[in-house]
Image (cartoon, rainbow, N blue to C red; front, side, top):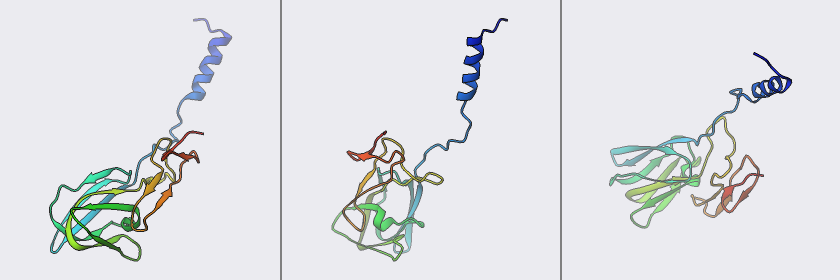
Length: 152
């Protein structure tokens, strides 16, 4: 077998381009909320990715436990009627008044550790939650335009 200088330099370059396994794949924070209606309850597990997730449950809810996540300021709860949502001090508990079925929930895009920012083309503008208004989320590229993280 005959190696030329070009072949050897190509092989050396391929060796440098091999993934090292140090890049962590991106994922959204997994959430599990517990919805309470009197003595009954149910859980819903979903990703904090900005999408809306149906609960598929008709139980009238009076308390939502965000499982350590600030559900009051970071999520939107869709119900069948007018409601008042009151958050606890840390926001992980949300009281629903009057009690009623929660049709669906959406929570702001939140990276799972060890990630600290959102990847390119992720949703980077979040409107809603207990504080109201809109906020721009942290893009890894540092640039949010037209509600998406953009490459620089």
